[in-house]
Image 1 (cartoon, rainbow, N blue to C red):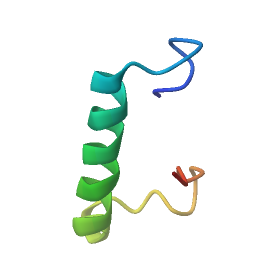
Image 2 (image 1 turned 180 degrees about the vertical axis):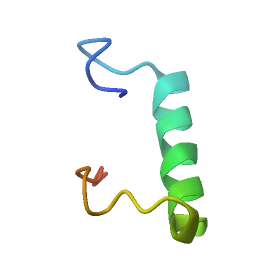
Image 3 (image 1 turned 135 degrees about the vertical axis):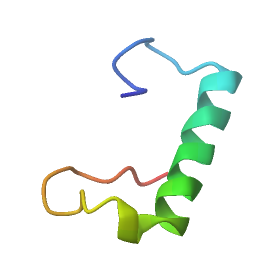
Image 4 (image 1 turned 90 degrees about the horizontal axis):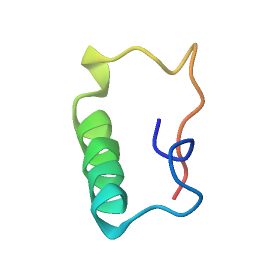
Length: 42
């Protein structure tokens, strides 16, 4: 979702990606995507 837009992520996109990752970790029980999508590993 983030890496396919720019060749290098802007600081704002990096921050948004990190916030998204934290949100997914905190509320993972509401997003059962671990069976169908790869995870981002910063």
